[in-house]
Length: 103
Image (cartoon, rainbow, N blue to C red; front, side):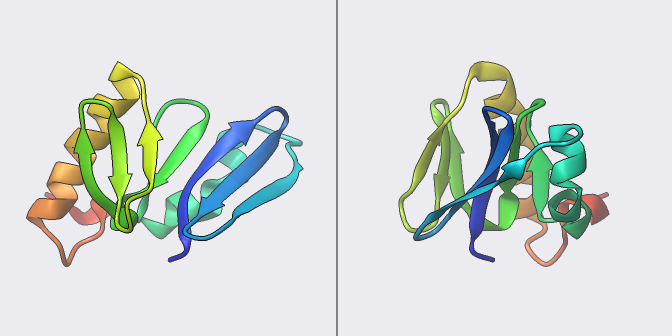
């Protein structure tokens, strides 16, 4: 519940949490493989090849990017922002369901 998002940073995965940033170990495979435990949880969405965002930590998604509960912001380019906005709207419409269970 502490992770806001995970991003590829150089050849590592960086986990941005509510109160700290955790630098992961060097990638040995793809970013997707490295964050698969987060993605399989159902609360995270892969936004592009190098970013996984916690849908449960989002307060809103605006035209500039993600805003997390607590006020932290993540700037996003147009396509990842649109992908995240669509997924977040689906989750917000069904608050008791994970993204993988939305009809």
